[in-house]
Picture: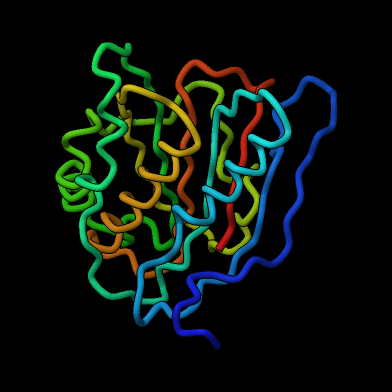
Length: 213
């Protein structure tokens, strides 16, 4: 296998049923490779989904989710915030709100929530305002509705973070998913993790995209 390979795409598809309900308009499964040399390629996989959706036409995507194999240990990763300063260029843009929801197994023993939140804030401080909340945004899908839920066991632990940023996009969803994956590892999560990002105030009739790794 090529030692420079980041990931290998497997199945992909989308649900374009026109019935007024929320649909996962694009999804893919990816096998992460060479994880002894690199972090989980969260951003790359979601960027592929973003590119595919953009080629279809004008579409407002209101959510994204990924199931990440955090049981596969990866080397310490550098913080990426200084490399993504373009998110801060819209200095006059109104703040957009979205919720990040994390789900994994083992109930209350799954992770250290305080350590996870502290690490996530530290790695995104120039881009996001982050506050823990008791539940996800109204209208957000439950984990049982999301593809890849079967990779997690029962007795789910969950954590919800309300975020404010200068934009909402799949690119932003990819950034925060990557950052929260690193924070989850710092908080002691070493098992499959489902991460969902959903724009606050979005209706269930709109669309979402996802990546499963």
